[in-house]
Image (tube, rainbow, N blue to C red):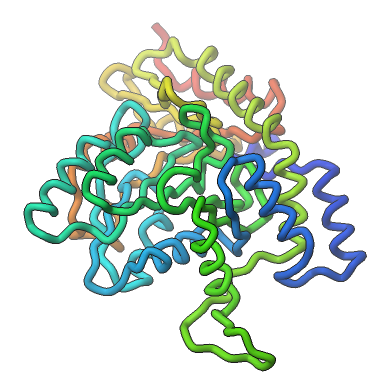
Length: 377
C-alpha cells in the first residue's frame, strides 16, 4: 500500500509547540488565559477587524452570530446553499427557518443577483429575512460589493461565514470583515487550525462584548454564579489558542504554498478535456484552501466519480464538492432561490489533496493518477 495522501491535514511548526509548552508550564489550560487575549489581539491586528472572540468552533461562532442579530422562532434567514451544513444549522438552533440562495459561476459563492431577487420578493410580501448568512467557499470571498449593496438597500444585516476563508482578501480587505459580524473556523482540516476552534469578529466592539458574555454561560456580574439569561460554554481553551498563535504567524507562507499547489494542479491537468478549475474573482485573492475542479462528463468521457475511485485506489483522499443544502435530507422541502449552479458543481466537482506540507512528488503522484483516468486521445 502506498503512503496515504490526505486531503488537508494540519501543518504545524515550532511556534505552536512553544506556545503550548508555555500554557502547560504556567498551568493556563482552561478556557481562559493569556493566549486567548493574545490571539484575539493578533488576529484583529492582522485582519483589520476591530474586535475578536475565540470560541470552541466555527459553528459556535455562527450560533452566537445569529443570536446576536436577534434571530428567533418565526424568522427566516437567507443562507448560501453551496456550503457545509454548519452554515445553516445555527438558524435552526434559534428556531428560525433557512431559505437558500444559489451560487454563481464567477466565484461559486452566493449569487448577488439571486439575492437581490429574493429580497425584493420578500419585501413585496412584507416579510424580509432577519439576517443573511453568506459563506466564503473554499478560501474565496464572495462578491461583497454587490452583496452588501443589496443587503443595505433592504436594511438586512449580513453574517459572513468565512469558516473556509481565513486569510482570503477582497479588494485588499480580509475575509470576515464584511457585514455586521464574521466568523472563522480553526478546525483540524483548515489552513489555520487550533485542532478544534473558531472565532467571531466584528467592527462593533459592543457586539463582541455581548458575545463574550453569552459564550461564558451568560454569567452576570456577581460574587456568586448569577444567571439571568441563557448562555453557552463556547470559549476556546488557552492551550488551543496557543496553537492558533503559532499558526497565525505562518499563515502567509501556508497560503502561498496552497496557491502554488493550485497552480501545479492547473498546469498539470488544465489541458484535459472537460476539466475546469474554481475561478478566482479579479477583486480578490483566494487562499486556495482546497484545490477544486470540475469534470464535465460530456466532454471528458468520464465523470467525477471515476476520478474519485482512481484516487481512492491509490490511497489518496479526495472528496466531492459540497452537496447543496437544498439537497440535504435535513433540509428537504426548504425554500431555495435557484439551485441549478450548486447542483451542477456538486455533480461534477471534487477537491484534490491540498495540504501545505505536500511535496512536489506528492502533487505529481496525484496528477498522474488523475490523468490516468482520462481516455487517451
